[in-house]
Length: 289
Image (cartoon, rainbow, N blue to C red):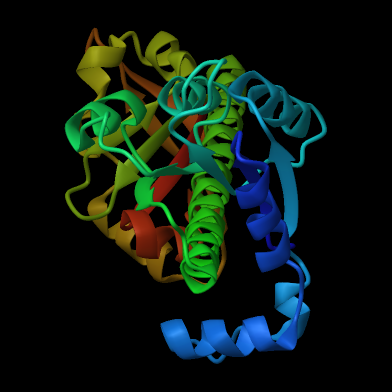
């Protein structure tokens, strides 16, 4: 992922805008000064050259630049915003409207006055905000930009990680729902039996129709109540065999207590599934004609 070094400076003072432009112009002397100031030798001339500064002299103009950056999918990592910018809206209103457009951007409010309290600023902008006082030293500007861009990158990696997890969860949910629909549409009876306690833990509607038992009654039922001839030893032996599928015949005890002959195909879950969910056997049950 390419680092986001796009910065926005909004100030009605042209001389300060020139300071920003001069500060972010790649020069070796500036880089060395920053390395000494924050103790980060990883900052190099090539990384310094990646800063991309846009400027505006009024809040409305800066807001328009933020909207344009979002439309072009080139968001700013941070914005330096002057508090006082007559005759237009002030820096706090500008920052609030920018934050409404882009919740990810880091806001650095710059002021030479104390006409806005820290509590008021924090309540308005909520998060990812810094307050800097004029006059700003060149190294201070670089430090603020470096830290804001670095934090934006970490936040973006976290956002992408969360989005990836959500996408995987949605995909798994879709696959699970698809498989469940297939299982429920089968004409053959299907049940999953736990080898830990020989209880039925999952079924499909067909097994309820074949047996005459309700789905609620079948869930949690001992397998021996439904298939008394299918001894527990058979299930245990089948689980220990290398073959994945075993076919046999038995009798199913329906809700009226009548034993009906059935064909059974037993399959053990794969080992990777067992390690996650336990030991289970899947039984496909079909009445003998």
